Length: 490
Image (tube, rainbow, N blue to C red; front, top):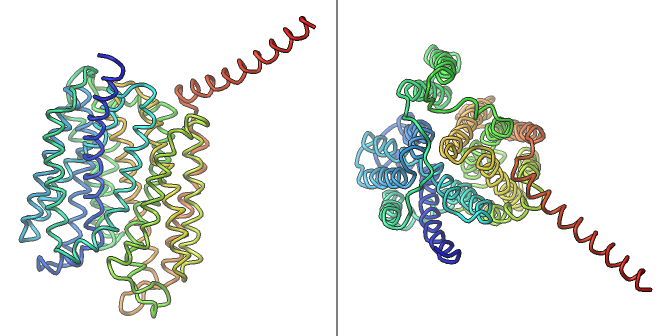
């Protein structure tokens, strides 16, 4: 196959990947602004409707690393089609749901599609021309981040014109088309990991993730000192320790702990944990903040649609900064791009905390948040892919995505506690509560910035930087040689 034909073939594969990742990302956040609508339409309680989010989160957290690992071993294309199929079936079931029970089950099925993300990165690593790997990963990572914000922007107009069922009908058709396209157009990877999926580590991984995320998701409702919350946290910690010990001893680990101990991997995962705390908590709490009537001392009384428009600058800037991440990383390295993204994200959280009474302040903060998130998401994904063998890209990317999710759960839980402190008699949070909550997210992002300094240069970064230096030095040598030749002729 010629180079041109190969690139044309990858463009087709890449188009399928973009549609797949975009659909998954949108389904993460489309329901956030419309939970009250779903609660009213399905005649359920506020407590129960939160499981529309929790079920998706739990399912995706368990499925993402496991599906990524299976894809590394049996074929990424096969598992991509399977993950898209689960996403399509879950979306169809949610679109048809007439009860909260069916909706929760549908969201759990949708969560199985979380494997799309690590599989996408693995396929890019296997199929893209070497010079296109970095830019392709950056675009996919940018779309993932954009989808998280775009869902909030699009939800309002969709339910204004149609109803909440269409938040699932449209993705169902798109994802089904992507699954068919993946089956016929995406080549099966020839790069395979050895071994099989170890059942015991998979069960332990599922156990500690479920225990931890349920505790963090429901702790505000149950009480952080309640027996259920503390018991689940304790179970999660115990299962986590046992999981680590088992993974170190089994012949074929689900997740290779030696890989997780690589300096570039564990430090990037630490940044992902802290960054996730800031991003997901912000996206979760900003709509409620913006929709509060200004008579409360804050907020703008925005509708669901208007609150989404406040975040439109974030979505637009996030996409373009994600696109710029790869060429910038080629010049300065992915580590420095991640550091730049972290620094840029500190500023909007400071604005949200201390200067949030004017509309223009929110728009500026939204745009700056998009700038930082776009750089950071793309750089984190590149750092992971650059740092691990091609046979472990799926599981490594899956764990990085999971760690961001766990960070988001922790950040949202802490934010909920802070915002709820000093609430009015009506239960409405105070301006001080939101101020302290956003200040906490600012501190988390500052720590993420400091954690960036611990990340070593990856081998690919060093190669690209040395190559650039060689070009410069070669050019200087040519100038010197040319000057010497002129002197000799004189």
